[in-house]
Each structure stands twice: as structure tokens, then as C-alpha cells.
Length: 240
Image 1 (cartoon, rainbow, N blue to C red):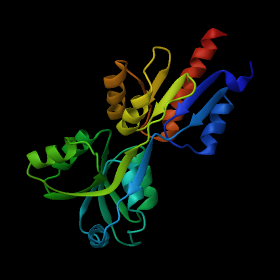
Image 2 (image 1 turned 30 degrees about the horizontal axis):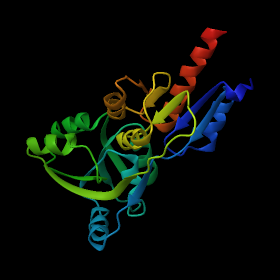
Image 3 (image 1 turned 180 degrees about the horizontal axis):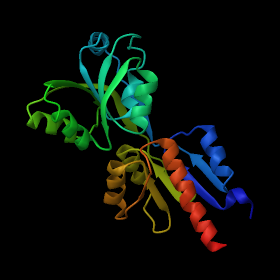
Image 4 (image 1 turned 60 degrees about the horizontal axis):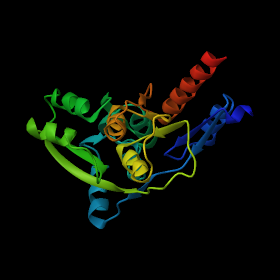
């Protein structure tokens, strides 16, 4: 059997070619097929508000890299933006896309991030930039502690379910939305190994499959790919 055919992994998100090549060098075929589309929201009212926010003076909250990417182009060099965000992929995109970002704190989950915001007595209000199906933990926790939340929906998530034509040894999930979309037409099985980028996505996988997925070492796309590569490498080595 050719080395590249030892294991086949499906990513539910488009990947950089370098990640596919890294997997191939370890005898793993990494195929990507997106199961969601991200559609930025564009309205005159939202555009005007984002331009105001870009002038600085607000405390911004990001819990998804898609949120940051959806508002790219509004930020100005030399204008400091005070930001709370999730770590991993969200933090990476904040640092890459927002000039002058002052990251006040990061966390592994939305609830942990909300608790950090509450612990800062100087904060009375935040601007929460999010998608249309964001989770409730952060705004509910902040509101319960009398912190005002201005919520701006800057993108919509559209699920794009599809029936797989073949079986994969592993499947990579990067959001609860991708989990829901994937399992709309595909049935969980006991042989496929599921991988999740973080605890929230992992909980969505477990809810549908009844199985605990493998959680990435860090909440980033490269880290999850590497986690899957190492997982199957270990299996391969133990069989030699």
C-alpha cells in the first residue's frame, strides 16, 4: 500500500496546502471539504457603527476568527483597540488583522473570557462582535454582572451539509456549526476518529455521537491538524 494511503482524514474546513503536504509526509492523505459558508453582513447601519468603533475608545470582544475576518478593513494604524478574545486561532487573527490591538486577556472558552472581563472593575460596557448563531454564555454572564453588552452581528453562518461518498479514518471539526452540518447527512460510526478544535466544538461532537472526540493541543487549525497527524502516527508506530 502506498505510504500516502495509510490513513485518510477529512477536514470540514478549507486548509492551507502546507498542512496537506505536512500530513502527506507522514503517510496521511488530508482532504478538505467545507461544511459551512461564512457570509459577512453589510448594511449601512452596521458600516457606520463599525467606522465609529474603529476610532477607538471601546472594549471589543471577539470569540471567533470569522468575526475578525468579517470586519477586516475598518481598523486604522495608530489607533489602539482594547480587546478581549479567545486564544488560539482567534488571537492569531486579531494580532494579524487589527493594527494597534491591545489584547487585555485571552481565554479558552467564552465563559472563561466573560469571567475575566467581569474581574476588571474598570469595564462597564463591551462591544461583542459575533456571528448570528453565537453561543449565549458570554453575553448572559456579562449582563448578569451588570456589564453592558452591545452586540453586533457581523457575519452569518450558512450550513452546507453533504453526504460523503467514502469513509475516512478521521474527521476534523472547527466549530459546532460544522458538526451540525456534517451530521445532517452523515451517520456517526464507531471506527472514525473525530477531532475538535476546542472544548465547545468537542461538546457538540459528543452530543451527537455519544463519543468524546480528541481535542486539539491548542485552539488553532495547524494545532488540530498536527494533533490528528500525531494520533495516527502513534497508531502506526504501535503496529510496527
